[in-house]
Length: 131
Image 1: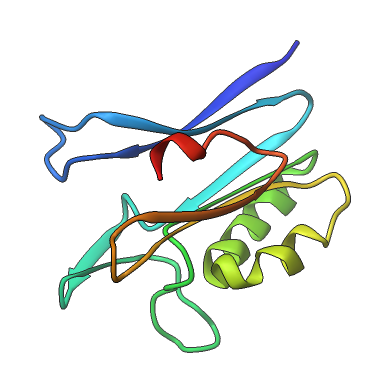
Image 2: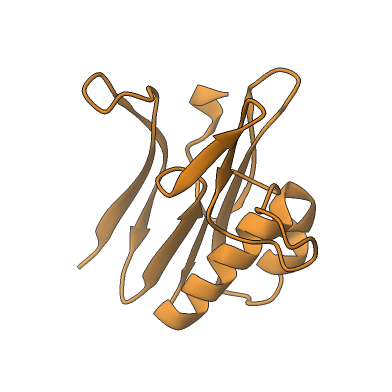
């Protein structure tokens, strides 16, 4: 059997009025998907939202992306690689995606100047309608 996984984001800061917008959907079978994101456990400072993931290169909150997703057969690998991809961001997508031939990835970043979402993906589709 296949299961479809839908990645969504909250479009409001107040949970009572929040609506979800689908970012992407992918089918999984005998696989795990891990998602790392700055939404949820986060804080705001200087008008920016920072997540709980720490970038070991800087010692500060990861700023490479706002969401990263990885699909592989191993849940342990997906957990580690989604966090790595969140830290690496758009610029590191290709290097991370090339670590495993069967890996599916999605990394989403927000352009600071325009506020629009930017993304790169391999094997996960669906972002074109929201950018």
